[in-house]
Length: 102
Image 1 (cartoon, rainbow, N blue to C red):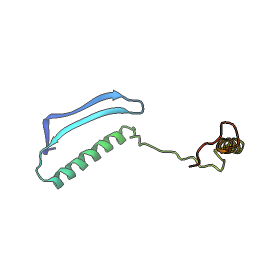
Image 2 (tube, helix red, strand yellow):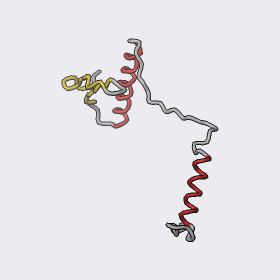
Image 3 (cartoon, rainbow, N blue to C red):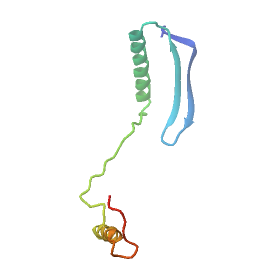
Image 4 (cartoon, rainbow, N blue to C red):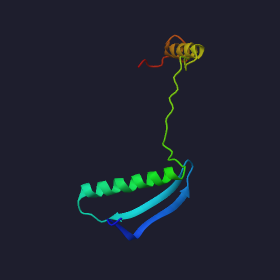
């Protein structure tokens, strides 16, 4: 590719990370116009994706899982016990009581 400086362009395997094999791709794109730069960058990235695809490999994308449940995460019995302990601590007639009410 004419718009990429070959002398300093490189691809290096950096490390085996916890969930990835990290690769560094480094190249100077020799154009002044930003839109030209973006077009060349896009072309390079698409060529990389095509190369990965031709090898039968794939790029892993991060994922997020959301768990939906109808279960209550608060134990009703523990909630009642906590509420009773707070009410007792606020009761001025009980020894050790007199906790301020927010």
